[in-house]
Image (cartoon, rainbow, N blue to C red):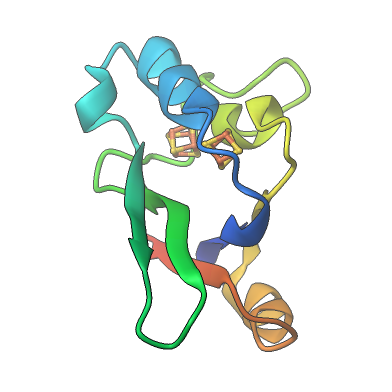
Length: 112
Ligand code: SF4
Ligand code: SF4
């Protein structure tokens, strides 16, 4: 089964903790971590509401915390440290079903 990450960015606060947790645990610069945060906006959309979202992006440096780099309970560092609890890792088929349930989410297939 292929592994994937589902992020519910509606709840992402833009705190950068996932990025820093990955960078520190993998000895990487924060801008090259396994997850890098993007800020889209703020600007006023022509459709009415403001565009102002934070979107974590999983990079090629994500190794799914293999090799003893996960948290003490085995959870990947980014998942473990996200206080908004808006990151899930698991099987792609299962997460794809969750993706279909509501907007403001993104699904990444991870090859580690
Ligand atoms: S799963 Fe591990 S390696 Fe991948 S982004 Fe999260 S902390 Fe980094
Ligand atoms: S730790 Fe969670 S809330 Fe903070 S930036 Fe990352 S995904 Fe968003």
